[in-house]
Length: 139
Image (cartoon, rainbow, N blue to C red; front, side, top):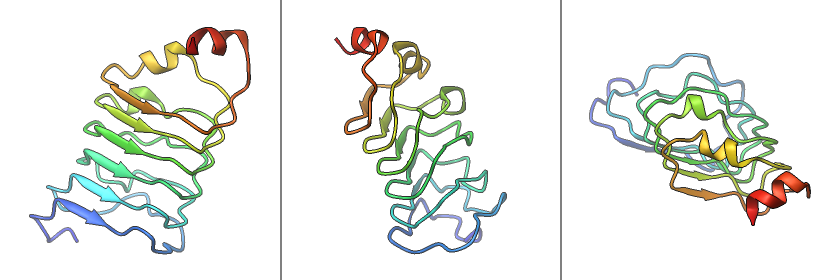
């Protein structure tokens, strides 16, 4: 795909992507949107293009999301097995995060504030633990 210089959007959703995702890949320079929804992916590697502004990895088998995507504005990562929010330092321009239907038990006000530009969060339908800190935060 690296020779498709004008490719901006790529949707490969609902495919079974067998095997391990490589650590490095060649992508078109203009690629901004990548949809790999429901592809049975277990791990996301640095193969994901750094140019992305929108990434949908919902409905996969992910247990963590630790890659650095400096231009990413929207991350759709619902219906996985995540137990924590992604690292905000690796997503400095994130505006929207949809992380519903994972296995997150809690997060703090500080966790959300670490995403400096975040405007929209959908963290519904997780397995939250009722703690004083969490209750104080959501009230």
